[in-house]
Length: 138
Length: 107
Image (cartoon, rainbow over all chains, first blue to last red):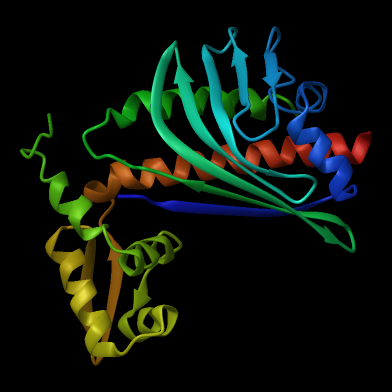
């Protein structure tokens, strides 16, 4: 089963600026888990390049490889969630950046697999921790 | 090793169709009638009825008839794993995009 989830948001800033926030280590560090001390960011945004974001404090991370990079319009990458050092399934994301009167329309498409024999509880715990941590950002 | 004892293999089979997943995504927001779901999928009532029967057979949804209207809702217990998959990722991205928006507004 390959479920697909799409999340859209219009954010301030030109596509160029929003692209930089997603595809550079410095750009990501300004918002992605910025409240988790010690988070590390490695980004090589070109086809075949890899990214990896780790939060030792939360015991979570995410890594993957870029499969499509069209600055500043669209990138696609694999998405492997890391929970306490254990890799999850190889999932995929596509992020598009479209000009909008109020800035940039971002569309994140996240595709499975969802496999029903996986221990969903473990996964959920990792994400809940993340969400709880994000909620404390205030 | 796939475990069949929990019956989730039936859930996976029921969800192995884009239209049926679309139905499930819609029902996450609340119950819907057969005709509304037929409209959503752009297919006829007989076709949507077959898909809904398959989802109900797998225990993914529950259907109830009131007069001439059949209403469908998710059976949370059976769909838990799948709903968790979708829900956790949806929440994650909403939170990430909140953080990104906040950063871009303040920068």
